[in-house]
Image 1 (cartoon, rainbow, N blue to C red):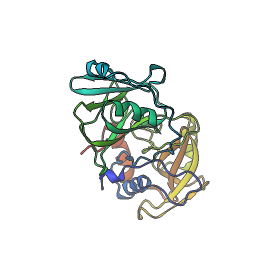
Image 2 (image 1 turned 90 degrees about the horizontal axis):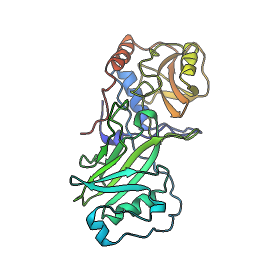
Image 3 (image 1 turned 30 degrees about the vertical axis):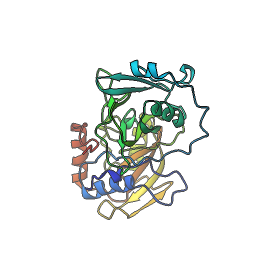
Length: 290
């Protein structure tokens, strides 16, 4: 299955739906080809920016040379320090105007666009940096807290950027979505950290899956009717389907609301087996960082 970075995806489009994202098609390909489900990856869908807030005062060059570079403390969105050859950047205000992030980053000479976007649970805290050609930038890293983590790619709390970094980058960091807020990044609902992880949902009927989802605080927003043996483009979106239809996949559109993939016939047994393997090895596959 194609794992190129241009297949990183945002959430499925909000209604009215004329089409679905490449991510939905990738999940369809996974189901139809009976391969282990990948984490659907992201093409940032940036929100329209509001007018920037007034530019904050810069600290003196002497202070910059010693340790910290920060705007006016009353409006600081980022906490920036130098450590072991990196700028270690902790995001203090997850809801700040991106222009405020940019102002602070420009202060230390970084041509970086930093955006914090609502994501599904599996992607909360993840850092995804890309260059002008959309290639993943390995030199920009997430910073992680100590202790266990139940996310697909670690629990980042900020970004590390080499002090000598001279390029241009677009860095996306996932945050928890607020109630009613649509996800800009999503993945299969049984991925690590998602509500249906290790739930044997494949080939259960819609009638059977509803109470299981309800126990996990999830309701059905829409259905994608597909043919598990057909082509990725063979689907239709509906608000309702017969309770006898079989569930073959799904993802969340926003907190507590799911898009459920169904068909009138059950999926092949291999699809059921692959879902079980996914539960047995929840760390794989993760995001392709190559």
